[in-house]
Each structure stands twice: as structure tokens, then as C-alpha cells.
Amino acid sequence: MQPQRKLSDLDRMHSAARALCAVLLLVVTSSACVTRKTHLATLDELSQVKSERARLADRVGLLEASNESLSSERKGLVNSVEDLRIDRTNLEKERKALQRDIASLQTERDTLHGTLQTREAELQKRDQEMQNLRGTYDKLVTDLESEVAAGQIQIEQLRDGIRLNMPSEVLFPSGSTQLSDTGIAMLKKVSVRLRDATYRVVVQGHTDNVPIETLRFPSNWELASGRATQVVRLFQGQGVQPERMTGVSYSEYYPVADNATADGRAHNRRIEVRLLPSTEAKDEGNSAAE
Image 1: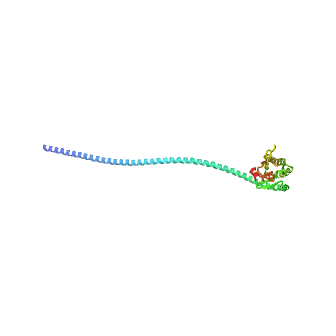
Image 2 (image 1 turned 90 degrees about the vertical axis):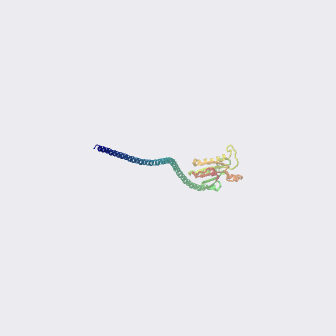
Image 3 (image 1 turned 30 degrees about the vertical axis):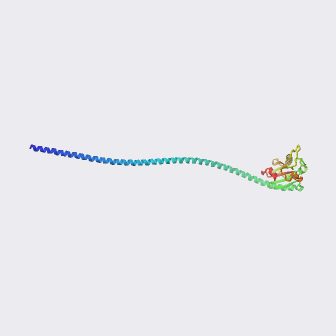
């Protein structure tokens, strides 16, 4: 009985060992399976991390490119803003210049308007004076009819007024500035038509080219001037306003005839009285040449 019991114990020991080996094999096998799964999971996670990293790297690249584009666009906008500022400054300068031009043009317009009104008033006054001069011409012709017939005076109606031409021999003794009685009487008739008028009275003294050299008249300039002055003084004494009158000497330099003949020299020795509108701007030098 005792040997059988030993054999049974040995069987039990072998059974226990086999069971232990089975358990160990199971544990080892299970551990190997867990390690492989973990490794595969880690590899999959690493792959995902790499993919995400690559995606993020692409995203960073896109963002950097976008940032560079935005920086360039920002610079362009800054330049555009500066250009707009310069344009605005230039436009403001142009606006101010235009305002000055407008103000200048308005001033010029107002000035021209005032000048036009003044000119229109002058033209109306001149037209009225020309009508008055035509009336004066008719009256002088009537008043001096006998003197005109005797050749003592010529009365001529001009485009811009009246010319009275009187030979010096009728008005003055030879070489003198003292008015003769005939001259005084004729000039008084003329003055009647000048007193109440408004036009200008220009008295011109002319001589021939025969030299004169005296203490009183060193040349023909003084002789012509003295004769013109005597006529002006007589008109003033008859009531003609002195501010309307001018006495001028032309000496021998505006002849109307040839000084080579006695008759020509007689025509050149003369007193001319010009009756001109007060608005007439023509100078006496030009009027003498007509």
C-alpha cells in the first residue's frame, strides 16, 4: 500500500508541474499579445502624429505666405494712403488757387462792369455833346455869315467836333500878339456860343517858317504861344470857363500850305479854335494834323 501511495503523490506532483507550466505558458503568451497590440497602437498613433505634423506644417506655410501677402498688401495700402494724402494736398492747393482766380475774375468783372457803365455814360455824354456841337456849328455859321463871306473865318464841322480857322492878319498886326479891333469883335461873336457849352476849347497858334528874333519873341514858338494865349484870355473874359480851355503853340511845324509862296505863308499864319467833346481823349498834336 505504501508504494502505491508514493506513486500517487508523484503523479500529483507531475500534474501540478504540468499545470504550472500551462499557466506560465498562458501568462507568457498573453504578455506577448498585449505587447504587440501596444506596439501597433503606438505605431498608429505615431503615424497620426506625423500626419498631423505634416498638416500643421502645411498650414504654417500657408499662414506664412498669407502673412507675407498681407504685409505686401499693407505696404501697398500705406503707399496708396500716402498718394491719396499728396493728391488731397495738391487738390486743396488747386482749390485755393481756383478760389483766388474766381475772386480775381469777380473783381475784374466788377471792374469791367464799372468801366462799362462809365464808358456808356461817357458815350451818352459824348453823343449829347456832339448833338450840341452840331447845333453850335449851325449857330456859328449863322452868327458869322458875313465874316465867313469876307474870308475872315472858316467854320468846318469835323467828325469829332468843329474847327474855326482864322488868319492871323485878321486878328493881329504883323509880328504882334495884340488883338485888333476886328479880331476882338469876331472872337466875341464866337465866345457867345462857347459860354454855356460843356465841350473843350483848344486854341492853337500857328506861324509860317519866316524866322523871328526879338527880345519878346526869340522864335516862332513864343509868337504862336502869345497869340493863342491872347485868344484864350479874351474867351475867359467873355465868360468861357478857363478849365475847359487850352492854349497851344505849334510854331511853324504844322503848315497847311507851301511856305515857298507868300500866299502859302499867309495861310500858315493862323489861329485855329477846336471845339471838342469833353470825353475826347485825342491829344492836340494829332488834332492839329487833321
